[in-house]
Amino acid sequence: MIHATAIVKSKIPESCVIHPYVVIGENVVLGGNCVIHSFVVISDHCEIAKNVEIFPGAYIGKEPKNTGALTHQPRFKRKLKIDSDCSIGPHAVIYYDVEISHNTLIGDGASIREQCVIGSKVIIGRYVTLNYDVKIGNRTKIMDHTWLAGNMEVGEDVFISGGVMTANDNNIGLAEYADHLTGPNIANRSRIGIGAIILPNVTIEQNSLVAAGSVVTKDVVANSSVKGMPARGY
Ligand SMILES: CC(C)(COP(=O)(O)OP(=O)(O)OC[C@H]1O[C@@H](n2cnc3c(N)ncnc32)[C@H](O)[C@@H]1OP(=O)(O)O)[C@@H](O)C(=O)NCCC(=O)NCCS
View 1: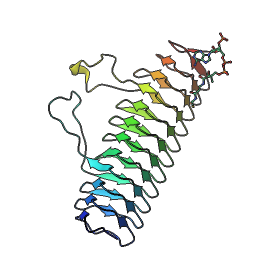
View 2: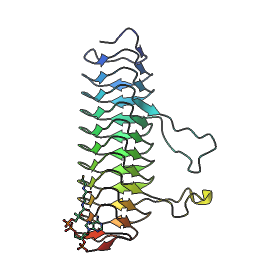
View 3: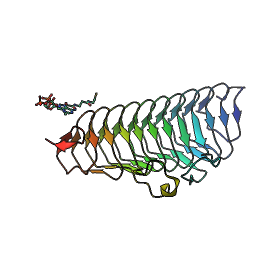
């Protein structure tokens, strides 16, 4: 069913429900049984597999804009893939050149920049921001309001609590370093407590625990726990 007010420029399977005021661009592929709620915009060339539900006001396939104000030049292809059985929350913004694997939940108002790759059964909580080129492994959970810096990696089965902040720039905004920024690397099964801060280039090895509110300035070895500012083993 396609509502009369929707603007749909691609061929959509009959089993999909397209609510009022949706805009779907050209060469969009939708699988069966997708539900696209009101005021969603899906840009040209996006690919969305079966059983995906997209809640009102989400923007799928936003083009990063370079007005000359950015120091990091966005790199992206005009494509985007959301695999089957995902749910995309209201007002989420997913840029072009993002891949999301099956059964993943994207929370209300989340913002996901170009070149991000997200595994299956992942939770991206409400108002989480993933900057450019963030890779997230299967079954990882990232809770509300966390901010992941550009060019970083999170493994599988990781738990990142709410309000965690990460950084990728020890030169703090000096333009000449913009293309050499690396965020932290958080390995499989690690757990990051609420409000922790993790500085650039730090590796948190597998199965580690970072206590709430810690400031992690150095690598954390596997199977260990750290706390405090600066974070130290305990
Ligand atoms: C790290 C943590 C698991 C430790 O819990 P615990 O083993 O029960 O530790 P205790 O509360 O017995 O505290 C042990 C000591 O560490 C200190 N401590 C505990 N948490 C700390 C933290 N986040 N930062 C610095 N010191 C901390 C305590 O003050 C205490 O110090 P003391 O021995 O000098 O009195 C816990 O404090 C924590 O940070 N939990 C994270 C909760 C969270 O973010 N959940 C997310 C989902 S909502």
